[in-house]
Length: 461
Image (cartoon, rainbow, N blue to C red):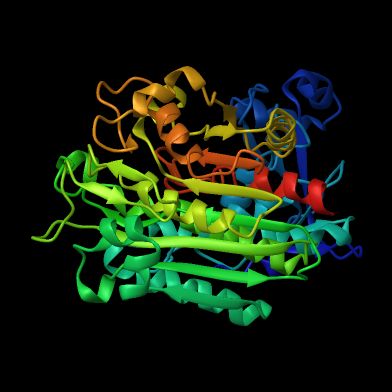
């Protein structure tokens, strides 16, 4: 795990190289104020003030230089100087003007490396950014660590990230923060959480299904339930995925990764909540005892589900988990899940489909996401589509025929397991970045984590 703590330090006047961040609209005026040698150098490099232009500028002495970045992103964007954090050599830097603020996060994440399976070949040591806002350093480092934790967990191959490994991650959190932890498996799981057991029953014994629960905080504080879908690998079951669809299914525990990282933030910041984190951890495997299309599944809530698609397994394990979370009458339930391809077709990889049963709650979450540049997009819990979940022989199906409104009907399925008077948010997130951007490499990604964290701080601070 990357240690971010040395990379953001208080500015005490120590020697440092400057970073000039210039908006394209201000480039001509800035350029006119530079010495002739700087103007000549930039002309030779064809630096014309386009966003993304970068250059090293000579100083007065032989060892003096500074960095130039042309950037049209607002100062509130964490990604504003992220490219500099990636390419500059080791050393100490400060912004020529303006506060570090939110940009510190991108500076840190630009130096994150997932090196479990290969040596990090990045030369040199850390790039240190000085800030005049020392009070923000600790939380920025924690937030960077939370994002990196999601990335690392999702990037880990499924052979090294099964239900047992998710349990170990939760146990480490419990030890670090003095939380209590309970794990339900075996006969107790089959009796109490039949859908979780059914989805995971075909996996090998060492990857047996389980429900992981962690509790922390003052019981007098509002109860907050955080749920993360933990399908450690999704073959599709007997409705098997094609190879192209299975290629990235190590990331189907991305919801669990988000829940674990968010729980760590909540406990580290000592948010005034009674935290209840729940992760149903399974592998959707294929064997002689795999559940089948047409099976009728029992649920913890007492409802019956006609299984129409074994590849719609995430909503099944979440149904039992939502029922468990609701039993303690929480003030709020939030679930993260890499749930539907339909959400990606509708919104692409960057925007988690966001569902909420309370308009004011949804608005506060969307506003928080916009403020921290972690965008979300709300989709409707459209009552008119609820009839798509009808079954001829059970209380409902898990996946309607036809494929219309796939992310909406999945959310409506989950809603069946949430009491009407309990505020609830469901994030259908991709947890993956298909193309790299500065400080955001291709691979596992935290999408929606920072938005939810910002909203929770406002709600419970």
